[in-house]
Image (cartoon, rainbow, N blue to C red; front, side, top):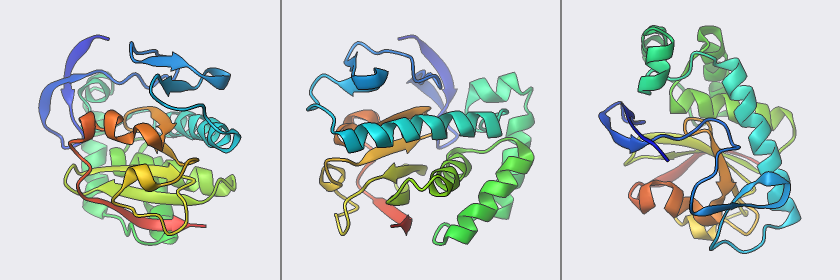
Length: 209
């Protein structure tokens, strides 16, 4: 997979692998699973519930991309393609802020992002969260890696499972990460998130059962 200079979720320039927004992309460490879902070679076979969550996650990613066509203000490719507009609009959005701890706060922030056709990881996760909730895809968590300043959604996390321990989220849990354009089994969370460098402070701000 090609390497390209872009902005990270932190808004810092750096050399990182390009994460294709299209879920049809294949990596050398992944193989096509059921229904074409990407599956790590080391992962066990996916359950029917996990596959269903993955399918819904794919739909959520497509919805976010359609709803926020200008993309992020902290991803170089999106800033370039929008001629800088995504950067300006997401700065406006950041100034508004979001109540991450309530469904209403997440809904309002998603609406503000929708008006601006753009958003960074927090806004993109908010749009995905509201979409999945409307489609009755539950349980649902709006989550954030505090020490990595990155937001995403988790579907199917087991009740009362330790938030700080991704491998304990349950056999059916799925990560939906619009900023990276990925949805995958939570079993591979550590590998997906920069080999686990970001996961020492994971929190769930809002959960819908």
